Image (tube, rainbow, N blue to C red; front, side, top):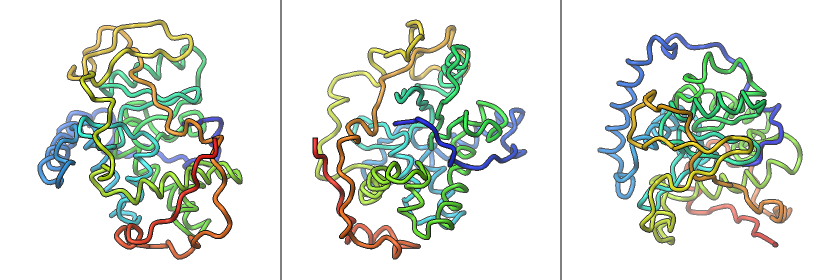
Amino acid sequence: MTRNAHPERPETSGPRPWLRTKAAPYRSAWWATVAAAVLVHAPGPASARTPQAALCVAATGQVERAMHIPEGFLYAMGRVESGRPDPDGTIAPWPWTITAGGIGHYYPTRADAIAAVATLRLQGIQSIDVGCMQVNLQQHPDAFASLDQAFDPMANTQYAGRFLLQMHDKTGSWPRAAAAYHSQTPGIGTPYQWKVLEAWAIPQDGQDPQKPPHPLFAGTPAFPHPVMPKMVQPQTIADADQPDGEAESLPAPARPFHPFQGFSHVSQPVLRRPATSGMRGRALASYRASPVPLAGPTG
């Protein structure tokens, strides 16, 4: 995801007591329960979702309900921000995702992601997006009390949800709020807006019924051939099943992703498109019944 500068991202907020480091054991146990519940009760293909991906799914769902964001809208944004394919082809936000220098990396554990951010900072890289909703740490240095909190799925998603509400109040519609979440610079947020609407139109299991399972998982491991960010020396990536904090060395970034690769060649949406002002409070079912047409690639 392109990360040049995001001065418009969420305003800062102080740490919440239940998210402080000393509460980490309780928080971990609580999230394990939430992940198990999502895996048991999620319908269809979502039953194959990994426990890590289920953390972002649960967080976005709770924030949507608490903040009265349309069903599935924040989840769709999360899939655009940090979406990673599961073996069955579903796409879900990945909580241990970082983006630096315009390139994103998935990590198998929270400890690996935290160590990678620390390494990047030692190299002088400060503009880093983290977590389910990719909050930029440079633009919002006081957003989280610690890196551990920044990667907490609920804390990360609550922060994003509050800012999305601010943008909704300012713009008057959810699609335009999504564009402003990415950037309030005219023209920059528009391709992101259409990408979010496209993701929102796909069923909640995150799988497009017209597409086969993702080819990434055709006999390949989940974290193959680590690709290092600039200036980082190659190191062995931690096992995906290794508990947080047990890695003996700083982790190497996993497979890079480019959510908006080629977007510079995407034409701007034509003026004669359905008005988005009526999207305020629009239900997911009604949107799927009459989706907004997307601008297609020109190059």
